[in-house]
Image (cartoon, rainbow, N blue to C red):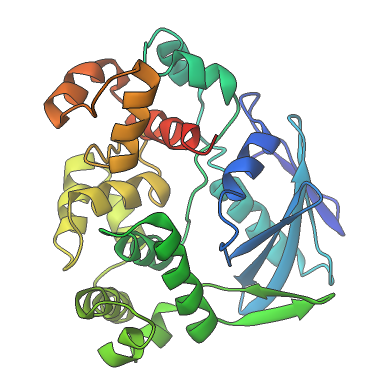
Amino acid sequence: MKWIDQGSYLELFPPKEFNFKECLVFLGRSKQEVLHQIREESVYKLLKINGETLLIKIGGNQNSIQVEFPISAPSKSARKKVAAYVWKWFDLDQELENFYLMACKDRILQQIVQQYYGLRIICIPDLFEALTWAIIGQQINLPFAYTLKKRFVEHFGESLTFNGHTFWLFPEFQRIAMLDIDDLKRLQFTSRKAEYIIGVAKAMESGKLTKAALLKQQEYQLVHKSLMAIRGVGAWTADYVMMKCLQFSSAFPIADVGLHNAIKIQLGLERKPTIEEIEEMTIHWEGWQAYATFYLWRSLYE
């Protein structure tokens, strides 16, 4: 991580394959998003660091990212954790040179990687948030998924109001572990999804499920199997969490409907390709399936 602590603000220096404006476009894809706000080419986000609620403002260009503290600058140790969070949020540890070398020769990806050059996977560093969001999104359309997420956050999350704007934190698993299924059903969650989310919260509260333990396994198949052992987590959800939270560049949610639609559009096909056809088409993506998928998702927001 390359950064400078300027006291009142932070300056981060990302790899050369980074375009802050492209990342902002993806972050701004839904007006229903409740966990960050975009204003005047900056993104505002609420974080909880060392038990303290902090509002940060992130702006930048291709050369650097500036992180400001609109209310007040936190302690030095907290500033270091904020820098680490932002670095992870934008997946800045990932070197993308080899991805671009592969993608520029790939008939599905070659146009969009030039169009969105510098886009990074926008991660979800918190495991509970990543799992919950993935479970919420199962078998429903994206607008309704955002509606459920907004209700969930506004009912059970913490908030801070500054200059007339209210900012929200994702609910902590300790609080969700105390809920009954009916608490979520009142928000239009299905019984199954309510069970799954509360179950994940309880597993995390007991210490049976942790991000550190998953990452310690390192191997894709081991982590994937561990995630699929969680009730409510299938192959798609496991790959989504590995892609967005655990940062496995080889994670591949191959059954994703959006992925299928994007491939159909890029190749000008009359129908969506089958899983078997996608496996054949994407053999050269090995090691970069997550980034290929993310860029194809981005292409759907034109």
